[in-house]
Image 1 (tube, helix red, strand yellow):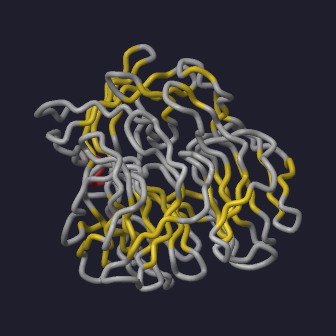
Image 2: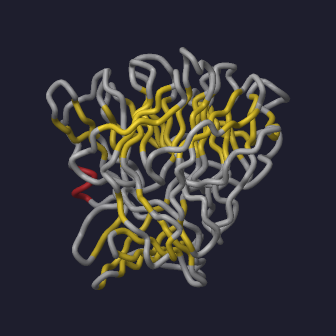
Length: 397
């Protein structure tokens, strides 16, 4: 178990793999899921947890992914009394309906930001930051000790292996967003650092040489577990998120212009989005709402309580305004929103907490609904077989 230095207690609401943070106390992060409590203590002086020999050897001689496969990386592992962040990675082949082991990360991590390194077929995938460490379970409590890291690693699908970038981020980040820009650069924005601070800073990663450079200015608010979408104009919309470690939420949005200034400039949107964290967002590339962004749900409660929202809002880049045409049929946070080939959006799962105190979180839902851009309404659809929250969803070819 890693140790060292003075312990800093992160108290913000925090997501780890399939677990949703629902609370904050005076001592540490506390996460609730089905009655299980997780206490996260992050220290800037704690070294990251490196892969063990078994993890490092799992991927040797494995299969290589192809176009259309889905890469799954890191996260928090399982265990009866001991849990730790993982370095392992695997990919899902939809043709065979199977998962295959592939190369391991140099450092174990959960809650990373990730992006393709380019829009070309066979492009590398780059993972940024995250939290790394180990925990011990006792009855219904998992005490987790670790640190937020500044690492950046790229995965080469042609070799099935990960390699560390030439440099690290200027700031450790967990809960940040990573957005591929038209230039091939990647914008990494916000997140929490290793000393429990929500960040308003951002940096640009160059996949060609592995370098990082700070953007010309900062965001309007600090943001963590916010949403970020590349607009058709090539600019990036960043919306709401946590602004501190006490659960405060932003009611602002920023527009990042990558070609303004020397290294890109943030400008505050004139519109005001709903306050939220752990929301889901989708850009419409064509159709009735071409160029607009749909943002759904999220946590919209103040400190010491959790409220999964029914909010459905649309951002129009032409007017730089947010509108709220219709709510969802069920409130959700840490759910998944997926643009389907017919232009509608599948909203699936998430955690449901209707204004409960932190010790009455509620549970994940298996319900789903469809957003129809033609009518700007949500319609119920058949439920999933299992309830899920904090999961991912990827459209297969």
